[in-house]
Image (tube, rainbow, N blue to C red; front, side):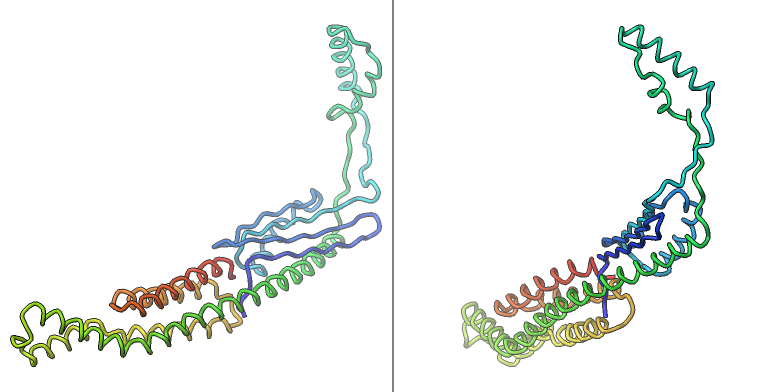
Amino acid sequence: MIKSMTGFGLISQDLGNVKYTVEIKSLNSKFLELSIKLPRAFSDKEFELRNECSRLIDRGKVNLSINAEQNESKSAALGIDVVLLQQYLEQLKQVSTKVNQPADNLLQLAMGLPDVVKYQEEKASEDEWKTVMQLFKKAVDAFQQFRADEGKVLETDLKLRIGHILENLAQVETAESERIITIKERLNNFLTEAVGRENIDQNRFEQELIYYIDKLDITEEKIRLKAHCDYFLETLKSADANGKKLGFIAQEIGREVNTLGSKANHATIQKLVVGMKEELEKIKEQLLNVL
């Protein structure tokens, strides 16, 4: 069963004084492109989290966000830098005098300037990190389920497209017998007009016809195309992430379809080949989003 590279998982949990939210989103990418946003208290855990993402998520352009919403402030004021506060007040007074503005509430304004009040944020405990990791794994489970559900939709569409290619191939089989007769009649008519029927060496004509038809023979292409389509459907059933493998098989299908078209020399078969190419292009577009 295939999975989509598009995924989404969101898990939240309120622990009383803090609410943690873990969100994972992904889009298609050839490799794992990981962007992580963490609360400052967990900044030292980023490497561990990256390793877990590499192990669990595979490919995709992934955005992981862990948010901690404080219900009560965990920050405590250590004190006020009085010297810095005085410097700010002096500068503010000078500015107010120069611009001829009242010097009201300068203390309140100075208190809000950088580094006047120093805070110390509590560091997260190991128990909190364990809780966050549990939420992360639940979010990954939801994310993987989303990918699996999207994968089912992709699988249904891919099977439909391969089915259309095989239907066209079956019609090629029907048109091929008419194709040989048409080629023989066209060559015969051409020689008759060019040199006259009485001047045609039938034995030589039959030899040349056999050689010409052999050059246009599409039996091998039909066999290989059928085999590639069957292998594609078989690979869809695999439990592994097979997006790249399916892409390679699609390339092989494309080669056989192109060769079939170049050898066809028959209007009906060429129309069927065009239909195959249209389906194959849709398959390739879908495969860009298969894990």
